[in-house]
Image (tube, helix red, strand yellow):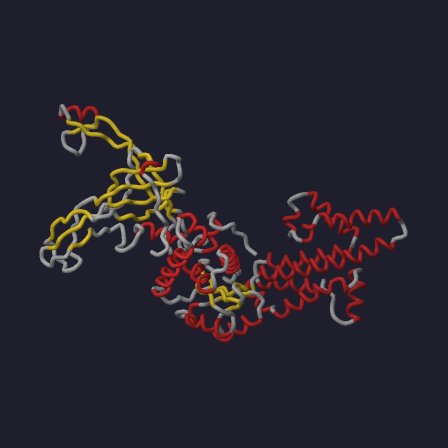
Length: 524
């Protein structure tokens, strides 16, 4: 491993750690442990092999060899961190002389890869951490250069990519896009599990269709596709999945609705402001201004759904006052809540019936029709131009919107949106990973193994002595499997132990981020 951290310590500035913690490595035993007198978070263990070498000669495979004394210099290697405490091992390495081929070779350790300056468990820990945390943070914590951490990541990512199997087409496929690293990227997610399936370099037709057609049994497995209201996706999906049911994500529909409501609200506020300025009666003008200020200072009025508004009587009272004073706001409320009622229905027929009634609230095109509409609702049609645009959007996507209400089709694109948000946050935290690294980090994070931390666990170890009477053990309960010995006391000991953080099966980026502190997660 290039760019390894420097090991600089002076034994005169160190003090012994008593008792010496057990390293919990299968072939290495710690004889003593030192730490800085000033309390700095650092430990150095002086170690030796736990047993004689039992393998064959690396040169010829013979087991006919003898001891040849220790290597001239101890082998110094890095081990895992214990919390924030860095750990290094100073290891006495025996040598052997092969009688058959005359080669002199060094002891081979199971816990330390040959030619490396880090234990196997540290290398595995680094491979795990680089997939869940920023490179710079991992480098700082373990004392390596960021270049070394990037090398570890690239090496592992290439290994995961080479061993990756084919993508099995899911039953419900979510497709989304995100502008990341200077281009629009295609995101493919298994909606049922929340697992990221693929991230493409572009979101053009060749990328979208090509990715779908590479999935195993895509034409048989994929029953539903969830997307936003992107015309390109609809055409691409119809091209390669003519029998799949396309569903427009309801949250995208709501997002468009609320955007248009917000713009209409601004238009109404401007008209009311003009109305107040032209009001000759100062008392009435003051009242109108007071009610208008309620809208200004209570922005939630046209953002909350009716259930959220109903949580507090004050909210209902303010909305009632605003709508009674200004019919323009009351009609805006009717449009907003009328559309929200569509997604409260339990069947397609009921949803379409509510939609049919809702359409009547939208100003029609044509001067004569608009005039008749204004006479019916007593508000100006031009105040709701943005909602008329929204209505035309729902007409354009009518089939895909109401597919949601068919049996077994109640799926949204939330998992894709959550994954998109996570990818954006990874990119922001990494100071620009580039597309290849960003894709690998998002795609393979769940294959990097369980999240592991290490700590020193204190324990009491029994001390055995000779049993004086065979019956004593039966009476006291101290008789053991160690023959005629009994526990005569305990001494303090400690082990370096690992703990794993829980993960989900099947693993979901969205669920993992919501349940851990690796990212301060929130959706766009």
